[in-house]
Length: 194
Image (cartoon, rainbow, N blue to C red; front, top):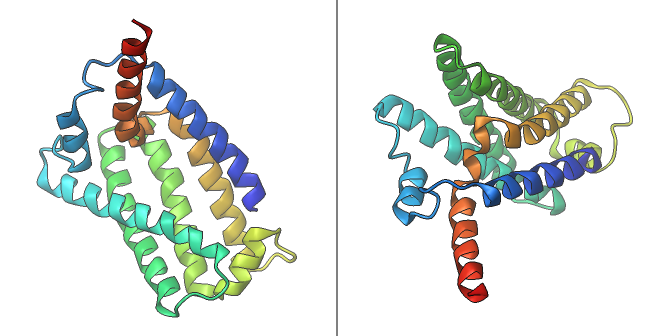
């Protein structure tokens, strides 16, 4: 399953960074814009800012937790913490998706629903399946079609679709810190060329 996701993720990430690198936004190079982005300072609604911060913290921590798949023995509480973070991500995504639906913001709604499906299936796997079973199936292909395997396939397919959609949607804001570094790199290259 990992072999399906990683190439799509690599291509989508490369495309995203290429598009960011080619962007000609005047605010890209301002460090205060990056700081504002990282602290969600542009969101004036405090409830939305809190939801966004909670979601992003949960999803980043959860994504980093996926690296534990490559460690054979992990401390007992870590998978449970990962499942709890997945539940937080799913809950905040559900609230954010409902807001997108009310505001008829369909581009964000599409990617939010893909991410919600990804978070919900990952959380459900953490609740019903043994870690060893999920890791074995994720590093290979499911040998049978149990509920955990069906959730895994749905999780990987929705995560792959979300990764592929990111460079083409407004969700490319995830590259804002990288955009700052790329803009700095471009300025350094221009100075060297002169």
